[in-house]
Length: 333
Image 1 (cartoon, rainbow, N blue to C red):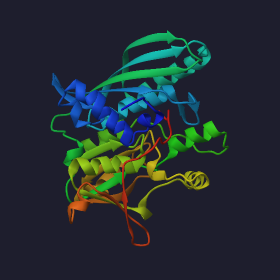
Image 2 (spheres, one colour):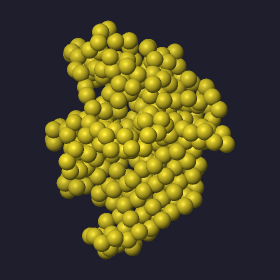
Image 3 (cartoon, rainbow, N blue to C red):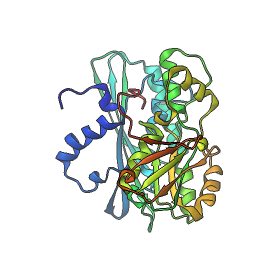
Image 4 (cartoon, rainbow, N blue to C red):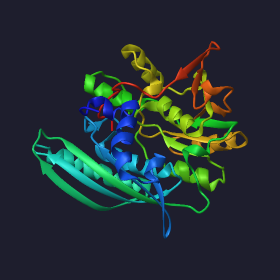
C-alpha cells in the first residue's frame, strides 16, 4: 500500500481500502466487520460501542469547535444503531504550544454538548507531544440498544423511502470557508441527534436503516448502503436540500454538495407506508426542520443496478454515483 497519504482520510475509496486491508484484516471481529457506525455487542442488555478521533482544523469555526464536534460525532454514531448514548471517554493529544484559553473553551463546549446530548464523560487521558500547538481528541462511546431495535445497513428493503434530515454540505462549506478566508454566513451543522432517533423509535416506526452523513457526503453514504443491501437506490435531484448560500459556494469553487460532509444530519430509510410519519417526527425535532424525502429503494432490474446509486436528474436522465474518490477535504472532523 506504500505510504499513508491525505486521501486515506477522505472517507472515500482509499479510506475503505485502508480499513479493510490494515485494520479489519488483523482484528478479526465479526462485529467490526459489519462496518457500522457503532458496534452492537451482548452484555447486561444490548450494548452499543464506538470510537472516533477528531483532528479538525481550524479548532474553532462558526457553529462549533472540535469539542462540540467530538461529542456530537460519538453520540451520533451510537444513535445510528438505535442506541441511547450514555457514556463517553475522551483522550487529548496536545502539541507543545497549544493555547490554554483555547483548550479551556473547547473543554467547556464539550461539557455543554454532553449535557445537551444526555451523556456523561466518564474517563479521559491527556498526552503532550512536540509540535506546533495542535489539539487532537480521541473518544469512545457506550450506549444501550432498546429491546427489539435492530437497525443496520443490510435491513433496507424494496419500496423503502430515503429521508435526509436537513441541508447537506454545511459543515464542509464552513470549514473550507474558514481555511480559505472566504467571508460568508455559512454555519456548521454539528449537532447531537439523540432526540431525533429517540422519537423515531418511540413512535414505533419500523426504521430499517440510519446513517449519519459525515466524511464523503450523502452520495458516499447512500452508495455504501446500496452495496450493503444489494438493492438499487434512486436519488431525486430536485428533492435534495441544499442551503442557497452553500449552493453558491459550491458553484464558486466547483464543488458537489453530494460529496460534502455534515456533522449533524442523518439518513433514515423506512417503509413507504411510514415515510410521511417519519418525516413529521424528524421535522418536529431540533435540527430536523429541513428534512426531506430524497429517494427510494428498489429491486435492481439487472446486474448493473445491484448495489447502484442512481441520480434521477431534473431533466429525466440517470447518473450513476459512486463512493468519493480522491482526497476530498482533509481534517474536516
